[in-house]
Image (cartoon, rainbow over all chains, first blue to last red; front, side):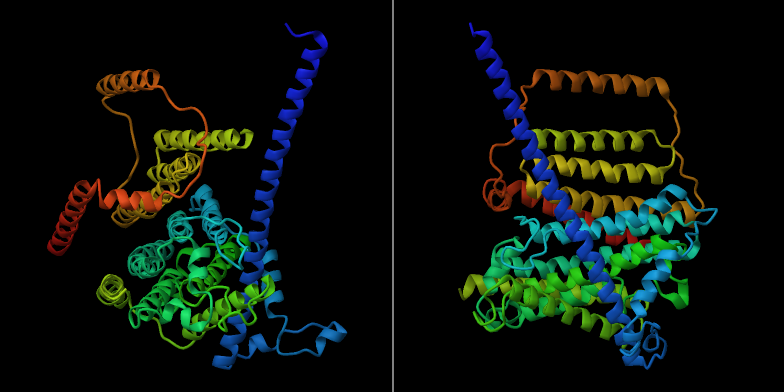
Amino acid sequence: MPTPVFSASLTLTNTITSLTTLSETLTSFIFMALGAMIITGLAAVLALVGVYLERKISAHMQDRVGPMEVNTEIPLLKNIGHGWAQTLADAVKLLIKEDVVPDAADKKLHLLAPFIVFAATLAAFAVLPFGRNLIISDLNVGLFYIVAISSFVVIGIILAGWSSNNKWSLFGAMRSAAQIVSFEIPASLALLVVIMAVGSLNLGEIVAFQEGGIHKWLIFQYFPFNLLAFLIFFIASLAELNRAPFDIPEAESEIIAGFHTEYSGMKFAMFFLAEYANMFLVGVVISTLFLGGWSSPFGSFLNGSAFFHVFWIALKAFSIIFVQIWLRWTLPRVRVDQLMYTSWKVLTPFAFVAMVGVGLWMVLLN
Amino acid sequence: MALFDSVFYGFAALTVASAGVMVFSRNVVYSAVGLLFTFFGVAGIYVLLAADFIAIVQILIYVGGILVLLLFGVMLSQKGAGVDFRTGTMNVLPAALVVLGVFVVLFRVVSNTTWPVHAPTEYSPTTATLGTLLMTDYLIPFEIASVLLLGALIGAAFIARKG
């Protein structure tokens, strides 16, 4: 039978233990919230940088005058020129625009759709490796997670098109869904080639496999099958991003702007930011899978610290983004039937060729 | 464990609430959105049970495949062909009997099973184990499932060509 003092101290111990677990819970929650905030901030800033690059590169490629003129009257900044304030002006315009919701729209789903698209994009950022230990969530199934969580984007786009109650929006949404679902197959098969070569779904291990210089990059392994997988994944990712030459879901000359025709103000900005954040996401994924991720192309040279890791991954990802933008302002849009032809009759069979080729190579030659 | 419990109850509440929306909504698209969050909640619970691969597959197959197909069908019929999709109530008595029967069976199963009620003690990757098992102990079911899917694929292509 415990004495009163003993039982009092026991209660106290219990209280302290429960307080400790509570504080541990709180710390985990704070760390999770912090991670989520870092991702949100990072994605938003990267999307703005993406928009800026798009405006500038398109202006240079097509001699567009507008984006070269935007300036301010602030004394020192006035002399920079080159239309440096373009993205600032874009962002301010989007923030102060009126939010118009059509009368016939399904209000609740119209509001929900951009949030689903934006949240799914941010969720995929959680597993991106920016350096040896610079990864928010080091999942064992990281690569698979990115593929899966992206399917929420499709749902968001379909809901946006449907809830707008507008024929063009619905057409855009259906085109987008059909396109993303079709191109997911060659893209996933191309990913399988990498997974087979490395033997892991963990993005960190995929980078570690390629560390030690440019000759170890997966794009150069199992020649030419991995190169083929790289090209297939790049083309399929363009289609999954709804970017030119596969931008038929937006096709402004045919269906105005597709699924986001009826969106304005901040809701439109969320689709817009999600699109550019997705471009960066694809850039990082392609660099991680085929181009050595955050590791230096010169072996151990310039590979020592987190700074260099971030530098290399950013350089590689933005190079991919540059090619995406370059293609958009160079190539005309394909037709719907050409798009489906590309996916089912060109990319998918060649993806199988790459997969079987690497498989045979691994069994027969290694 | 407080974190585990609160996350579990959060996902459980999300699953049950969105399942309620799915069942009680008269608008088929609202039901589909309810289903989206149900799938998400179930995937969260899989993660808590240390089944990482199954959780991802749950999202990939159900959200990326089945739900997209479902919404596609509804959109094409409702706005394209002008068919009005509304769920209604009919055959109340037989439905009530069937539901009661299912409830009794489920209730007995739930109350007679001894459930492990503690959190999993270790979280280790399951993918490699699953792959090995599928290629060794469960090869025959795996192959039968793939033949079935191949048959469905050929059938779908055949019907699409005819139409």
